[in-house]
Length: 290
Image 1 (tube, rainbow, N blue to C red):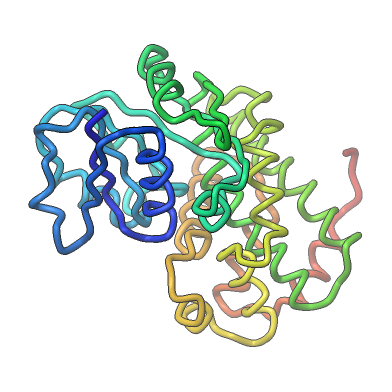
Image 2: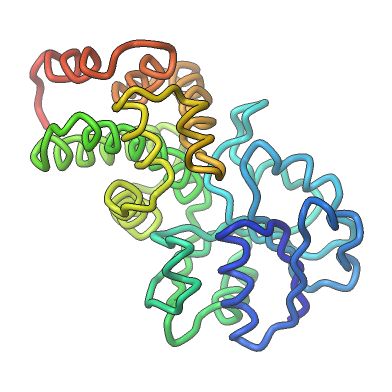
């Protein structure tokens, strides 16, 4: 396939290498070359940019090639899932436990491709799957996208647990209840429950909360140790999607009437609440059934 990958960051570069190893003709379009990329000649356009840049990038893509989004977030302006921003062409989303550094070095991994166009998803599955990168197909586009957005916010909280030195019991409890939050939101939005126990849900949540190089986990740890959100982002030097997504996800949950206490707590910390106060308030919530 002739493929344009928009985004020259760690994940865009790693995914481009994976595609080239599969024998595809790949061109990487960076911010400087966005208008010069051969979109009209492409069989596929892959978007690997921060969520806040997705809509602007889409406006520059000419032709009618399908879009495969690698972006794990929501549209900050509207709160919509990013696939809904794509109006004039088929769209699919790839998600899962895919740390760019590991994919780039050829370590084994797996992902899921979701699309309402099952034929497109199957075609992309065949194009991407390799001996080290196994791809599954899922028709639950809603669930896969919400997983990708929400897990980043939970990873911020998990990093906060690390930064405060609260221990593995607390971290495991937070991650488990975070998964419940994700599934609760997904159910309210029409997602399938099974998606949240799969690669895009539990799989991506686990690696995001534990990997030492995970940006969101690292940002949460830095904030717990006294850094402001902008300082944490600056130290990491790359996009930290959870910092962008947290207030968007909170606002979405309020609009549809779904309770997300961890997400609400992360937003409260970003707004200035001391993290140890958040930990106390979460532990002091009224006991209920699991």
